[in-house]
Length: 164
Image (tube, rainbow, N blue to C red; front, side, top):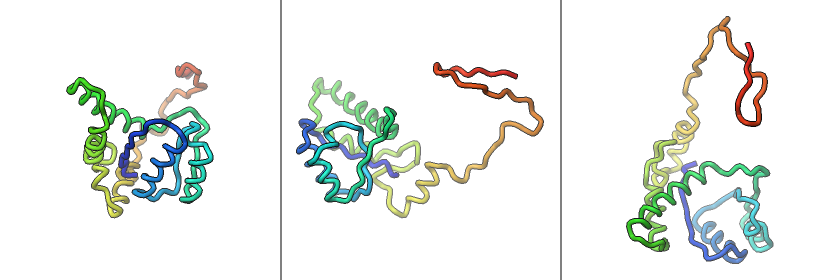
């Protein structure tokens, strides 16, 4: 919920390499569930046995839709990395990865108004409230007896067909 970012450099996507990285992650954080894409780097005997050893439920979504929170975090990290690459005129990232991730974790996020590095368990109810805006009163756009248009169908191209 805090959107704390972790990033680890990897040389390749082999099962042993991925399992080694997951062991590092599991030393830092205790997970119950993990969601990945359907890549073979996650669906193999080595990684599956590691998830079983740590009692972690591993799953993938059936759709091609990506995780928006992760995509936003990656975009932010890449933007910061490419600023440094442009400044240095070099694409070496191993020495700047940890400071940039720390920078992301110490920045206040617009969505929940907290820096992920500063979130504690005591902050979680307030964090949940700010993310999902529970106390916001419902404002109705229409009154009783207003004339409105009703959507009949949505086309595949995203345009709506409306009739009175």
